[in-house]
Image (tube, rainbow, N blue to C red; front, side, top):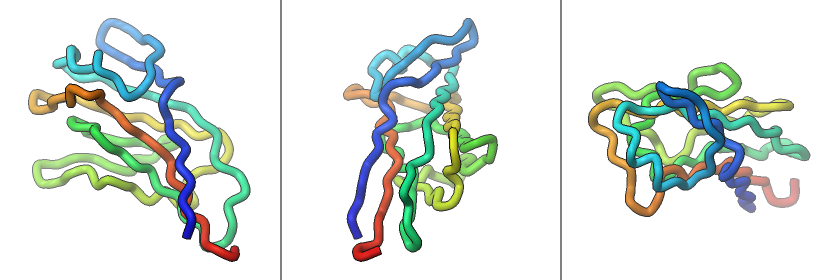
Length: 129
C-alpha cells in the first residue's frame, strides 16, 4: 500500500469564550488557553479513491481532545479510561465538503512546547488498484 498525507495546517477557526479567530496548526499559542477551545476546519474530501483504499484521520500532539466531530458525526469522545488513538478510520465518511471539529479543554490538558496539533488525512491506496 502507498500512503498519501493531506496535512490540515492552515484554515482553522479557533473559537474561545471571547470570540473566533483564524488559526494555523501546529500552534504554540494554544498553551495559553487553560479553559479550552474549539477548532473547526473545513476541507474537501479527497477525490479518486479506489476500491480497497482506506482513509484515516491522524492526530499527533493533541493532548486534551475531548470530542472530535466529522461532518456533524461524533467520531471520538473521551472518558475517564479512553485515550485518543493515533488514527481514526474515516473510510467512507469523507464526501464533498467536510468539516472537522476538535473540542479541547478541561483542567488536565497540557500543550506540547513544540506546538499543539499535527492533524492529517491519510489515504492508503491499494497497490495495483
